[in-house]
Length: 266
Image (cartoon, rainbow, N blue to C red; front, side, top):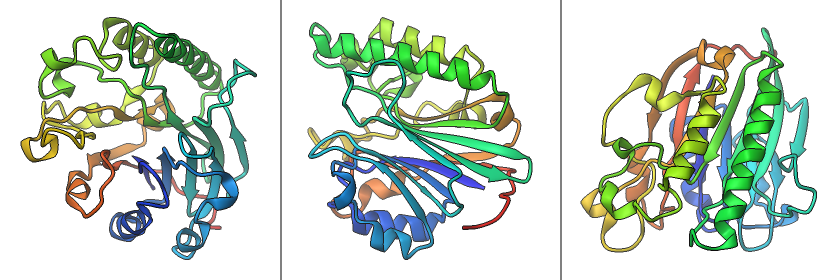
């Protein structure tokens, strides 16, 4: 089973790229971020035509997450627990039956947090604490869990072309990286880092300053795996070439392969 994540940076603007990539890579489950559309305007038709079920949690003009699955959803839950006043569409969870039990997948769009000296950074840190609480509770279930998405976190200096240029950015501040380590130290495995320690694995290139052409990238899109999911991990990769397509997102897809056998296709 192939599970992927991609911040598409507007589903309606990148629909042609999305469907081309879905056809090329043929993932079984996809977590999308920054869909930037309300639920009833999500372009389900072309995606469903490729054999996917669609679960969405949208918001007008910004944020928005979705999960696409070639298998039936058992249950879908939007919104990250922990703050009833938070109306940002940044989280959706779905469960899918496999022959070995329940598979749980969450699509995550963690706040950017810039500028760091504003309430935006406070919101980011609070959101990360809520995510850690969610992960802690879900890990108690001892089932395969994949938390996939745009984390807006550069975990280490090996995940950025020029660390010095990011020292004052919310994505790379010591507190941000510490919160991310606290999350992974709960028992989560970074799928990409489980298969490679290369220093040039990037998932985002800014539209400005020729970042893509110069390969000035950062790695901020991650699949974090519970022990039960990590035990089934067989491969992981980054579809860097998608960034060179016409009208690209500034992010590219990240995928991981697992030895899961679905109970049945939808």
